[in-house]
Image 1 (tube, rainbow, N blue to C red):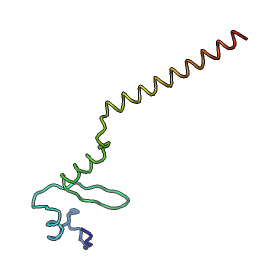
Image 2: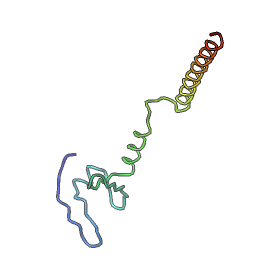
Image 3: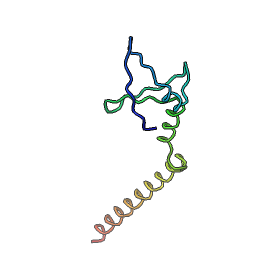
Image 4: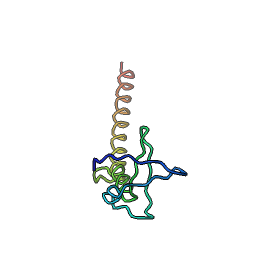
Length: 97
């Protein structure tokens, strides 16, 4: 929805969402919204939308975090092995020379 409407701030900072906006968001009386302040703007979203966005931030393309960690550790171990072998080869070269 790319609809822009003025909304007046009333007593105690209260605002009233126009009917068109409430209908577009599926918001009904007594529903709770999440307010996010970002770049000097207030973004209102339903709990369902906030949860969807949070899940999207956590989604890593279906890759298991555990599998990813194991792969990182294997790569780290391989680098360590290569460093150790290079050090040993350098040490043996000095001892022989």
